[in-house]
Length: 184
Image (tube, rainbow, N blue to C red; front, side, top):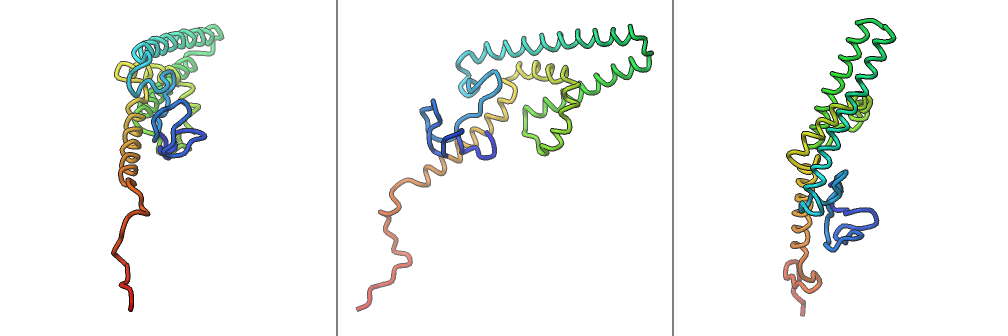
């Protein structure tokens, strides 16, 4: 759910139903590879988690092979030990930072989007760390599920509170407060 969590989606208004939805109110935010199956853990949620785990691990292993071939290319080019050590350190540090930032992103939204944009290049270099974070998170839940579930439940509670506060016809309410007695 985003900041305007009462807005269920494009083309809908708060309290209305989203296209393809039967319930009024805020709608869950879809997750990559999971859609909205994370809400009730239905629609092949378990298989999707297993597939995401296997896929991210396979991608991480393939990425390590690609990095190994790149390192072998540096050895063939005979650039020296210092360059080889610097390249390995760069990928290790970038992967560690990417892992940490990806892992933190599963639990909370970024506080400074500009800083996240600046780290995008670093996270791209350390993509192996992001893939490993994704792999490890699938053992607990769909990556990002806890954050989205908390936001969704908060939005549902706010929506229910607003709906319950608006019961009845306000025009039919009789208020004696503020009325002046009629003069004769």
